[in-house]
Length: 236
Image (cartoon, rainbow, N blue to C red):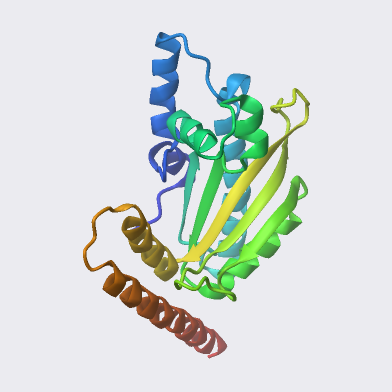
């Protein structure tokens, strides 16, 4: 499937409660006179998302001009919907306030980067670390250190400085951005695992878990083989 251009993608793509859903819920809340859980930051969050994705888009264009191919396959970006954020606050025992949504919880803004090759993930990680307005809060490398069930991905929580007011009323503001980086193979596997995790009453769950673990290991081997083949082609 061809990549969706960023400025079109950010309006259309959703994972676990995205921008389109958020706008519908905001409209509903206005009609019902219910204050957004994000408060006055509700209109700023999409701009934070777009600004950060533009950084990645710029990097991809630069790499493409130098090498002839982009460094990632596509981006999936979203602002967590009102409904999802309220549910998460409740699940964590937190009040449904702007401070909790944007300070105690760190995934109001989320970006998933899908690459073709494993090594490109680590190149993008280095680029993100070098962005002047970014401070890395935490990192988890589930690629070199996969979870017991076979899950592989690279996770980053960033503190991103932007020229808009934040939850504390500060300007420039600081917002958390959650970034997940995966190869196409890792993302396909994670999608299946997510379905298993949230689907109820699966009779053969033990067999499926075992098969998923086997597939995760095989896909990891394929990712490494594909990386090696690309290296051989480039060396010719």
